[in-house]
Image (tube, rainbow, N blue to C red; front, side, top):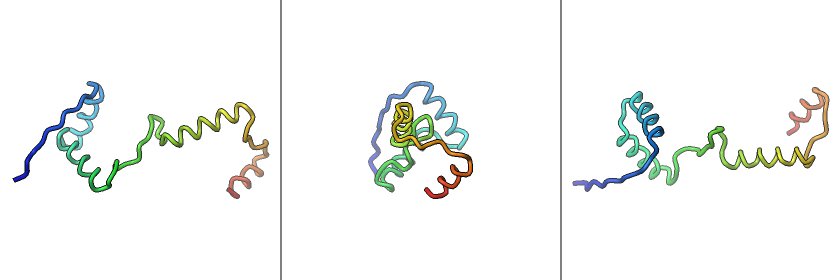
Length: 94
């Protein structure tokens, strides 16, 4: 017989309500969703999906874009201006 254990988490009310609504639409409850998630962590030996920011980017991608933006603002690593055909040819070579 399997021994059962309990876990307790704290989450803000809005996140809980939003997640519950999504899960209900899928036909599963919060407890089942957490069990599925934990099983997937075991199967994948880590988080079973790509972690992204609110912008849909990985933290590394977001940092890279912010760094490039800062460099562009200061004139570093900026490509010279090109005509449309030159730009297309340049992009094809990448």
